[in-house]
Length: 452
Image (spheres, rainbow, N blue to C red):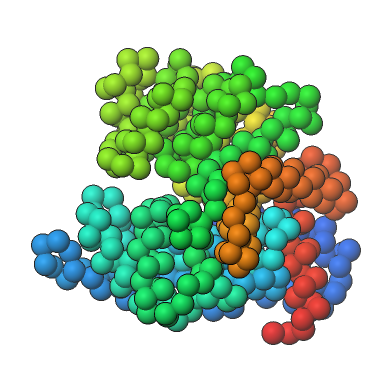
């Protein structure tokens, strides 16, 4: 049994009932095999074992009172995974599916993603099984304040800096920051994704979606291609999806889809600026459903109960580029086979771990340009890092300057992936390149700091 295989087995044995965490560890660890021989010090100092074990896990009760006056109780989580290269950094997810295993998988992925940004940020993640959908602003405020009454003990500008994720946007960040400021009596850079008026950064809402498209552009350039005329499928309809669509359109591509838990919209005419404005109002203001898009625009067709990738599998939809931006494991092997069969040659992941292991293998075996989430969607946390810098200096860069910094970071991440893949694995293997480049930086820091 190899050292890596032994580590994977131990992680699964010590963390039962956490399939998403097992999947994330297996996906990363298998690609790190070439580092074992090149870095015997990593084995000596048990870096592979230590990096799979969080520094700490915080779980807590979140009681709150709804608009009917009834007491509700949710679970809260914060996993501080690794701070070898900087303070813990990672989003908060509010969704009914949230459990400890999902938060651990997200925090583990965040270690390597943050390392790739070149900024001084460690890995962490948190959230709750609270569902903000259908809740009033007052209910969301009551919940987030109760959530922060416990979380505030564990975070700080130089300790742990949360941000948003699924279910946590500007509204939720605002309520949490206001309450943190009140109970700590300090105005500090402890949360990112804040509104510009109280310390946020321009481009932060757009950054994850823009970054995924920029990373895709770098991959396309290796084959002397660009987005002009390419048909692109985007899953989800939240923040990441919206700005992925916007940037695809700006760069000459045609985005054809959105989806939510109810079903999928396919618009063969493409989602232009006017249609995107409707989606943003639908999702961000009215919090409506995807099917309303088809009711307004007759060029669109609604597929009830199906994901974008189900539509590809069942209907043979032809397209060039995929931007999975909804949630983990939305693409399985059958989806991947259908995607390749129908012309897909690029996947740039906007969500965290949206493709399962079998799907990734199929993409790689069929010469698909596959941009793994920890590289392709790192633009969001990278811009959070830029926001932290601006908050510390009490200084704000204009939109163009932040966007240029984001583009440079995504270009640098792409180059790191290529360099590491050529040095340790197979040139052009973005999965191995991203994992190895992110890991080696953190591993060297851990060795330098001793057994802590």
